[in-house]
Amino acid sequence: MTLLLNILWFVLGGGFFSWILWLLLGGLLCLTVVGIPFGVAAFRIAGNKKQETGNKKQEGEETALLFLARILFLVSCL
Image: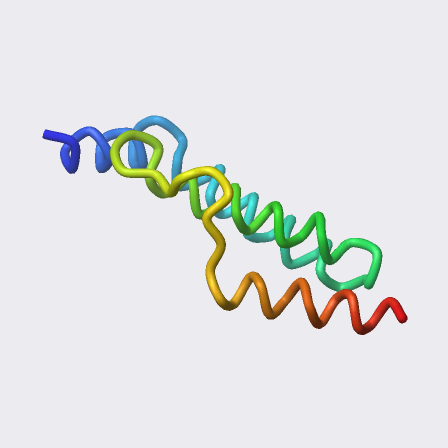
């Protein structure tokens, strides 16, 4: 049932369009050093748009790639 609701929301509820827009915004923001943290947040929001109902990550759970991106950003600021 959850899968059906996810598909219906993604196709009919505007999930696809908001997902594409968040991905584009994240890409544009990552073009500048100042915008990288906002771009990462936009990619995180885009990931959540694909699974509006159903299983979501726990708040504060990070992937290794996100951790590496934050370390690289900190090094680039020095």
